[in-house]
Image (tube, rainbow, N blue to C red; front, side, top):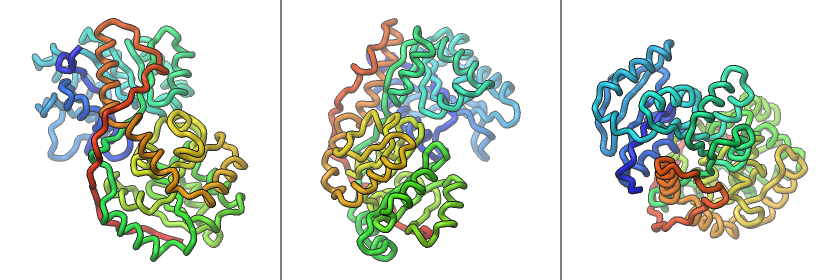
Length: 413
């Protein structure tokens, strides 16, 4: 089936101008599908109306439509209004799928809109939308309803595929990992120069920089990692670069151990603002207890930066110990300490080529787009999707181009 035959209605709570990894992923996938020739209509669920932006009014865009749906304090009212706007537009009759892009409200609303439109439902699981909901007495029935009504469920990590299949053995589940647009993600000379200047001014001589980037929530294992670093006896070998929103437990830990660990904190930054900070890192650290496939991992390896990570979810799926990263078992403090010992002595540059090769061969955005096109086509073709193990495609990458932002800000100790 050709892409121009596909017109999914894409339900999402995370879409630009929202920030964060989920919004980045949603934007990348929608742009990829539209760029390949599919028409994608985006129903954007917002917590509240944006000033100066119309609500419940369909806007035409290149490659599809956009409908802002602010829920405010009355989600049922908002979704009824969104349906009225969609139902009144003749183009809605051309919709071929409803896609629920993670989050709680798309998963709740997806089965209803798919039934009303008479089209198949595809549910996309990103990570926390499953990990939290499956153990929530309120959200689990809604999640189960979405799964049972889905023609296909896709997840970014293999462990999610296995868990969903165990709960719903009759529902087709597919693994589609996150990708990255390699044409727009590379370090400019100015990024490297700014990183070198920051390191010279801030990082104690001889220390390697460990980066922890993003929403550092409790599930990300930040406080666990700080304890492991201190007890490893190798804290003096590293400087921590913490960019994003820190778990309060991490803030308290840093304040208590100010004299024993070298660190810099930065506010939450957009991904292109992070490029020079990536350039400043020797290793990225993702010590999650559970996760999906973090964009930080994909962004780091695309720049040739290896990852110290827990052997779980997306890290276990795509990283190879000693080749593209250093892995330890989830919550294993001794194992994390051994990874830090290795990170203090190994040359991270020796892993850079393998990291870039991983991004090119398995994580390129065009490969990701192809996987979604195949999934949507399979659903319309009434074919059971291929097993996840058969879907690790190899992309046809183009050389990346430079993109840069200036280096500024930060707080160090």
